[in-house]
Length: 386
Image (cartoon, rainbow, N blue to C red; front, side, top):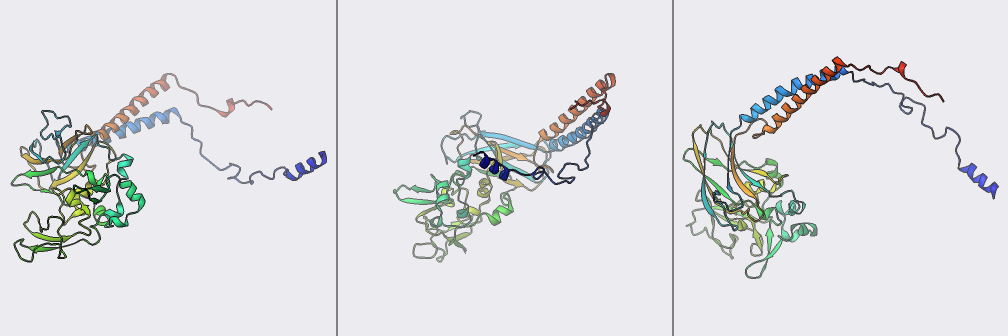
């Protein structure tokens, strides 16, 4: 028994040095290296240099931020306050009101028009994933996979007033909570542009009308050949009449499975036209989810200079309700800088860090002058004898 155990131990053992690393500078950690010693004088000088650099940079950043002209007015606080200009208590109320801004400084173009929402969590995981990207690219609901269908629940298939099952296209929480307040600039000399507000990459590669959608211009709606009907190739939705745009141009259009599907222009007729559908830029801007519960989204821009003293009036059609989640809505006008909108915090951070470095350097300098510390020297080290 002892002999067998001895033999097994001998067979399992290794010779001395067999598992040792190779004899090389890298393996034995003998590579040349720089081991800096933080000399007090160098540390003090470094702190002064950082302070001298950071403070002027912070002042410049703050100056750039202060040059941005920003005007804002909250028009619905979600609390039903008497100070609210457009407080609503139910969705799609279409309450009208006017918001007037008096410009106190010249506003160089472009002047951005944003809507700001507070206490709305687009970054919530359930909300964020509740969409079907293949559907937004033109895929039909019948080709939807089980994962996308589950993500879109409970806004995927609904019962209409006739107790008939209809499919939402696009489906999901993000698409079907579209911000549908409408802003109209009332000014004879200025125009608010609402095109070019979405990312080009989103417009080109992330959104497309459903496969089978088609449309054509038909001129005057009084023409005999400009009609829609179930027997023709142009169904024009449920109303069976051509769509007339703001230029009084009429359009014929057809959506696939229109009798079984509720499309975006049917859910939000005041915001989205049937010709645009999911290519509507307000919709595309909304679909890029915000990272914080307080966020701004671009609604339009004014591409002309606005002089000091000008009064800008916006007519608001309020439809998007906020009192259910204690949120608020604000209309914001802002010019831009090389760093975007107004952001005084960035400059203040630089100034704060610079002041901290200067104060720290001054205190360390006083300490080193009156009570210097001897740096370590190898000759003072003593090693314990083996």
